[in-house]
Image 1 (cartoon, rainbow, N blue to C red):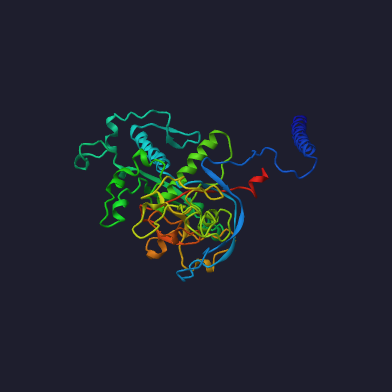
Image 2 (cartoon, rainbow, N blue to C red; image 1 turned 60 degrees about the horizontal axis):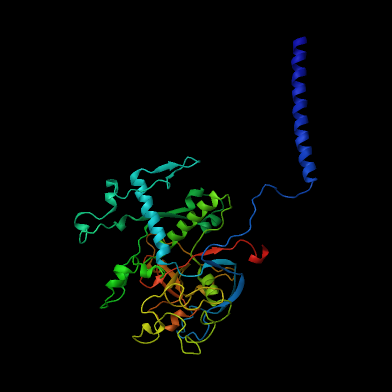
Length: 422
């Protein structure tokens, strides 16, 4: 009986001690917060970002649609008042040299894999050891080059068919309408694309036209480093945006910073809002009604007249920062190259899109009609007449098509009401 009583006393003392500890912690927490609802203290700070090569476009409203008469009378761009959230946009189209950074990254990642230069992350995930040097003379890498009958003039050239990259995207629309009934994995999409630009587009796009020098030189020659990348389809552009996001996030994680929104293609009316440069209903990015200034100088790279390509200073494309920028600091929002957007093309889209960040997207499925593969391109190009370089003109191309006159630039949603909030 005495031993039983001692055991009970010990249990009681332990219970009282635990209660005192809990009460002390609760009391100290309550004392520290003064019993008030004040949120969590250990949150990371956020001062915003200023991505290199991008400009800030503030939130605002605009009237989408033609800035002048709808000459085609097709009503595919009816006037409508909308609002756009603030965002960042590349001040120029993505250039050959910027795309080459992507190509080199994919090439080097394949070489590291061949050489076995791999490591595990802190989470146990396999990855590439980028600290290792690549010995390009190693025979292990021979398969990276054209072999046998595929070699031309005895040159040692990379087999660009191997330059493939897998990117992912999350179907937020499908997830939102699923109401949590399906597993998360069912909304994660993956696609593998070859990321080497289709340089043969320069020959294929123009019948009975000598453009072979552009096929051979446009992407690789240093003379064109600062010219806009072309010969990429819509999927390749999305793959670049995904890779750029991973590149940025890896740097941010190493610096202890908070990851931000993803780089992406601008949606159609985000692009139009940026192109107008703050001038509502302006038919051109510079705000005027004409393609020449008061001195008669052409203000963009397009086709000024029948059979006349070089009058504007560029026979084909020009440097991505040629001509004067618009009032947001964006270069070549008219002409040079047409630009991919994230939006799907439907003739009657303006009849039903929302007036808050209007965005019409569609991920094509196997067996879909060809019309479902159309994506909006904007801005017109070096081979287009003046109508197509107007800020309100809509046009489209199939998402799996590469052209010598279509490029892109990236956008990044701004987090917050205004950059002035900081």
